[in-house]
Image 1 (cartoon, rainbow, N blue to C red):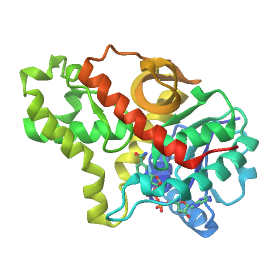
Image 2 (image 1 turned 180 degrees about the vertical axis):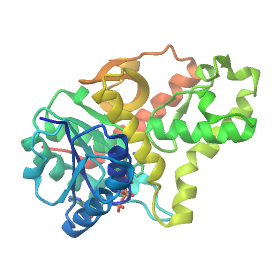
Image 3 (image 1 turned 30 degrees about the vertical axis):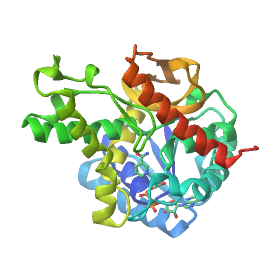
Image 4 (image 1 turned 60 degrees about the vertical axis):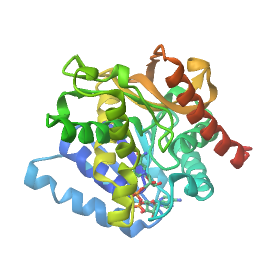
Length: 310
Ligand SMILES: NC(=O)c1ccc[n+]([C@@H]2O[C@H](COP(=O)([O-])OP(=O)(O)OC[C@H]3O[C@@H](n4cnc5c(N)ncnc54)[C@H](O)[C@@H]3O)[C@@H](O)[C@H]2O)c1
């Protein structure tokens, strides 16, 4: 039997992800689930009708029925509420945690062996809520944020230096939000350390732009971004399905790495067929350690606010 992927939430991120995935011809079936059944159905029909143009074969099912998701290899959680101008990601905490808890409960029932990619915000807390709900090996539940934040950083840096963003390698750690942690020392351009191109102070300006990257899009569109987020999810799906073992910054459950535990936070990992293959522990300097601690404290505060008891 071919590979099935389920995407919960057929909104901007979910439907775009389905479309990009279909274009890769990677899986046999994509199930798009939403509480608004007509949205799932309409989006699945639209994407399916693209198949004949590009010679694609993926079967796309739009539904509100979780039974259709049975035995999915990967479940991608993109449902919930998105931020509006003036809101930050943390403002979505309570409403999205109730939604995520209910959809993960249903998804794990039908796909007990699935890997989960969490996208809904506030990302690090929603990943934790998913783990507390599913009660499976946490390495099968991974939050997507670092790939997107890094791609925004690479974009702004490429504009500043007038070079291809493709040549920039970098990692951002910490929470998906204002407390993200830049790693200037670990950034290279085609293997050349970034210090050969710009100072740490100049890099900080790029980091500030990166932090505001999502907010700028919300201000323009009245809702959050979806194209680059969907592309970031597809990168993760591909690395899992092909067991590529690519290194990405993802939000994962920490068990003492970086002296942190019992929370989800962005760190570099190797991503393979079982989910997190390995967490890469970098030697951080004092400044980086402090920033990461600050980021972790922010996430812990939100987890405490929720007082999860499931
Ligand atoms: N991690 C990231 O980097 C990142 C990037 C972009 C967006 N996001 C987050 O992803 C989420 C989705 O964003 P979007 O732009 O696609 O929003 P959207 O409003 O376009 O889509 C959300 C969809 O979820 C559905 N939904 C709501 N409750 C549901 C439930 N109980 N069961 C099933 N479906 C339900 C809605 O009907 C809607 O179609 C938001 O929380 C957003 O903040 C995260």
